[in-house]
Image (cartoon, rainbow, N blue to C red; front, side, top):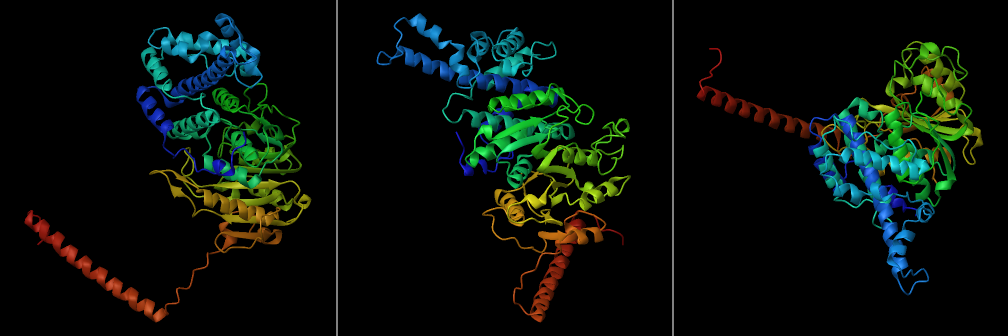
Length: 536
């Protein structure tokens, strides 16, 4: 069922507290000394299992009701026969529901949660589910029986997850699981620090990329897909705008085997079909889609990666604009994206701010050639503290293969610069997120500049956005930092005469100086009372 647009625009970057937060907080107490990276797979595997079991049980009970109703044309008189018919595997697969055998159902596992062999029972359940559902082959975690996993705590975790219904409420099941899944990913990213950020991109950043690219239909690709968040929100965007799951085709790749497993589970619970290649693999050295050309690329590659194996790729057909430096993969990623774009394709991706201005090694020359080729469509400077993996600010690059192909405004020889560094709100002591209205402001500015239908008229806004010609960018040495171009925001005139403002400010200053003297005297007296008189 397609979501309403307001549903997709709800501001949910892991900050909204509900039952999913309660579940995480309670589950985290059970974690004891287990590493967050390890515990993540324990919990998320169980959440996945609970979801597909709940979905199965809901359909199972509906079938039993249908067969037990004497008024129904499907009425079956013999009770045992009803149960046999309700176990018909095809009934579930026809509705995109995973078939779950009896010994893999949550009710069976929870009944045995206190047994010392609960780990083996969960592993067996995962194996059986994969056998019954080929689409899940090799996806599910199957190491719950290992000796290092406390079986008492595992049983407690099974009981805890059993307290919430993940797949038993009509029209809510996928949203419920999606919320839990996303919240857990966000919390684990925070707990893991830098390593966590490699699989979780904050929702507001993904949402902004999706809203700006607007991937209504076509091929979408992410060569460093992490847990699959770019794909999930692309599907949500399409559905929110009246499209369907078949309107886009998804391709991806992930080098980390456990993170790839997370992505496959994340996509499976949403019913999203995707081609993530034959196996986990490095996109630079083992491109799983070597001949793929796509309409959209959305990606958040690892920042400033120095161990990408560039010394083994000095002569590569992807390096059209220059050989990337061995010590930094940023412009290897940029050229990998460009290589995989179709003739009219557009890419939106996250990079460290240094990519906009660095002249280290060959980076400046590569950026200059990309600018001269008129590929840079838009640059967005984001505020700091958006990511769990780093507190440094990052930027968004938008690269377009063919600006001339646009229906309304061509914008050849121009680049839009947006400075969003002052936007966002703090959601806790160390993390910030963009609000819905701010994301809308940025996305609508981009669509208006491109001349997209119904997007309104574009105008430069000092301090926020500027459409710069190629000549101006060349004058700045092909530095792409938006602050160089947008200027300073206009200050509203409060119509108070300058002399009056100075008088008011002076009076305020003298008041504050007098108060400072008074407080100083009070502090000195208190110190003397305590016997501290200072130097005589």
